[in-house]
Structure formats: C-alpha cells, structure tokens
Length: 383
Image 1 (tube, rainbow, N blue to C red):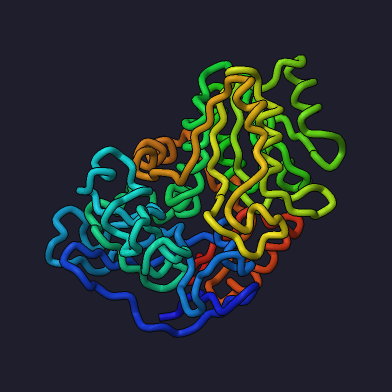
Image 2 (image 1 turned 90 degrees about the vertical axis):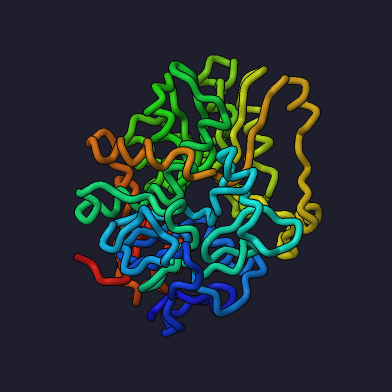
C-alpha cells in the first residue's frame, strides 16, 4: 500500500509499505478515504521528537471497513467509520472511567499510559495517512458514521481529533454559558476550541494569533481576533474584559510557542494565560508539551521544564486542567451535531490533496503559508 512515511526532519515521502492487515481477532481493517495532517504531526515532521524513520504518519482517520477479525461483533464490512486518535482497549481501569487517552494496555512502553496512531512514544501503531489502517479493538474504537458520511467526509473526519480536542479544551476550562473565553492559538485546534465555546453559548470568545488568514477564520464564527504582533495580547484581553480578565482560557499552541519575532518560548502562552484570565478563573491546556525536548532553544525545556509564573497562578486562585483528549467522551455527541445539520467543522479546511501530494502539503502547512489552515488527504483520490 502507499503511505506517508517519516524520513527525517522536514522530510516525508509517499512510499510503498507492507499492507496493513488483521493481526488480532478484535482488529478492524479500514480502507482510508480521508485523513488529515494535524498540527501535532508537525512536531515530528520538524524532528522535535524521537519518531523513528520509516513510521507511517497520520492519526486523524476516516474510511470504509473492508475486513473484520473473528472477534468483532458490532462493526461490519462496508461501514464508514471515524477512528479516534487514541488507541484504547475499552476494558482497562482507565478506559472504563472514560480516560481512553491513557489506556493501560495498548502502549508496551513501560511506565507510559496511552497510545495513538503514527505518533512518537505512543506505541508501535502505524498511522492512517495510507491506503489501509489496522484498528485494534475495532468494536470499541470505531465510531460507525451515519448514512451521509460518504458525502460529508471532511466534516466527520474532524471527529478523529481536532474537534473533540477543541471541545476538551473548553471542558478542561469549564466554559459555561455567558463566559468570556480567551484562546491562545488559531491553528485548527484553537479554531475548534473557539467553535466549541460558541456552541456552549460563551458570551465572548477571543482568539490570539498573528496569522491574518487564521484570525479571519476565527472571525467567521463570531470570535474576536487578537493579533499579538500588534500589541500585547494580555493588554488587549484586559481591555476587552474591562480590566477583569477572561473567565476561561484555552492553550492550543504547545511547547513550540514563539513570539512575533520568531523566537521560541515554551512557557509563553501558559504565562500569558495566567495574566489574561481573571482571579479564580480556569485554564484548559491541550497544546502538546513533551517530557524532554533536546532540540529546544530553551535550556529548561530541554529537560521538559518551563519557567512558569506559579506564584501569580497561585495568587490568582486559578485552576488548570491539561492533557490529551479522550476522544470517545465527545465524538458521538459531536457526530450527532454534524448529522443533524447543526455543525460544519469542515469550515476550517483549506486544502484537499491526493496522498501523493502530502509532502508539499506538509511543507506549506509547516511554513504557515497564507491560506493553509487545515490540510486533508484522500488516499483513494479526490472526488
């Protein structure tokens, strides 16, 4: 099968690799028809992780079931399914509590809970930027989609990661009706967090970024764009909230946050959120942070540590929730919103490409080239 393979820093290739296949009785084999390039793929693409060359990338996947193992009872050949990026068993203590991002059984690495497709340190599972994808524990992990799935693939594929992750950010931040919310980052997840906050009837949604095309996307759904290259984003938030600060804040950037001059500061958005959110406010962090980053320009963060304004965080009595999204907690209800015509998360999509065009898609998306807000790949071709 053809697949997008990591070859080294800023190098991916489309190569022939061994076909994905049924390996265990509970496996499902999916012919991938739609798969996304995620912002977190870029950490690996840029060589900032220890992903080994030769791994197939891609953790936002949708397609048609073409084979099921003998232990599968619910999912059927011909079903259109969306697959959470979490590889979860469904029966361990964490999965039973809904913590599928921290499954106790699917990652063989000692001391590490949680697994994902095509992702560094998240188990041995190949990704779905390929013609075929093996889905372990298919009955649990496959979300069987409604009848309109073939026609609305760019909507439903967002259920694999970015919309549930954006929703998770607002859940961690405890967003409620009428709240003012500030979101740092207008990449796909930040835009989905803004989208989620509007669904929760937030009174004001502010999105901080500096890329005009991404800020324009935020404005399309009624969010207030804040350009941090003009003046301090904290000052702008304080002015919009009459000096009080936002009720809730979401971090959707992660460890490669950088200032308008291009200098990287892994602590920048976290500390800006402490300053931007009111006393006793809440913060949700879904931007990726990793335990060690030897490639960081920041000496502390090379060891996975940051200079966090903990004194002010404590003094303001703020609360912070963080971590990867447990996709299955949200994907079914968000699926219903799409099916009933209440939501169209494909509004973030800027480019749909054939699988062979993935290297160029990675390059443009990584460079934040104008207009490249979300890239969707179609292994079976477009149309």
